[in-house]
Length: 89
Image (cartoon, rainbow, N blue to C red):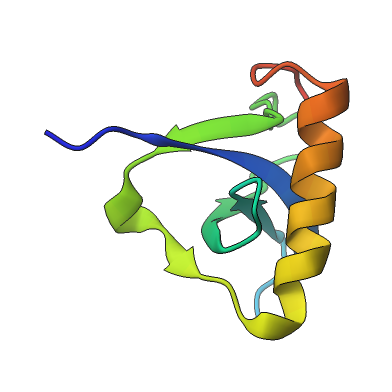
């Protein structure tokens, strides 16, 4: 069994390719690994919460590109310092 890794929300963007799709990017505190989650907005009353952090399997983590590592690490550390993992964002 593999232990899960905590990742913090570092970026929220709207997809250019599909309408009503939000891309949530979570990263490890060191910015080295990331987890991407896509969420379709089904309506304006969509009540699913986005939390400050997730615990994910290491198998679901990608390696962050060099250009994003420092930015992801800075944002992950900031999120961890001001939010509890289950805080809605």
